[in-house]
Amino acid sequence: MRQLFIALLLIVGVSAASAHQLRTASTTVLFNERTGNIEVLHRFFLHDAEHAVKQLFDKKADIHQLESSRSQFSAYVQKHFQLESLNEEALPLKAVGYEVDGTNFWVYQETPIIEGLAGLRIRNSALQDIWRSQQNLVNVEGNGPIQSVTFTVQDEWLEVRF
Image (tube, rainbow, N blue to C red; front, side, top):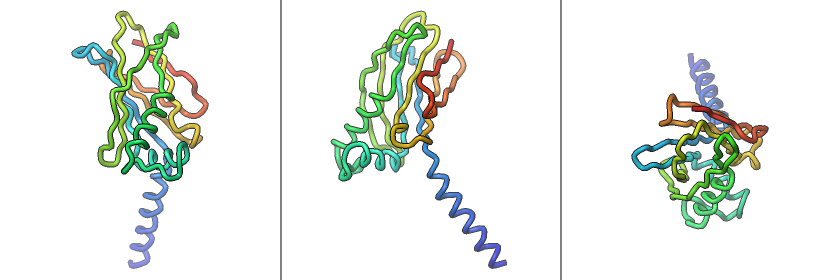
């Protein structure tokens, strides 16, 4: 019985350790009729963001303690995310802010809703220049049924249609 208990503890420990190795981030693109904006909410695991700033900017970067590290990471995320109409017209995203919330780092952007938009072309390559296994899920909400696309390192642009 004791051996079974130890084996279960090892399995749980290995599973927990390997679960964190999965590199994922999620973004919600929300059509907010009340504000007239498309709101973009990026969520990264704080642990991944912390490792990223050390590799991208400075080994002494610290998202927990340094405003400059948080600002740099936010700017990096914004550089790696773009929206276009289906006819490849850029939808300019304005930075709204960023925050640390528990185990997450959030980056916020917005752009006005364009009338007659038939769909979106989306690009999201954040952290894929660091980790080739990074996957970025994007959920589009508030304009018909929720639609999702997942970016892997080989994806450049993906589309959703309304």
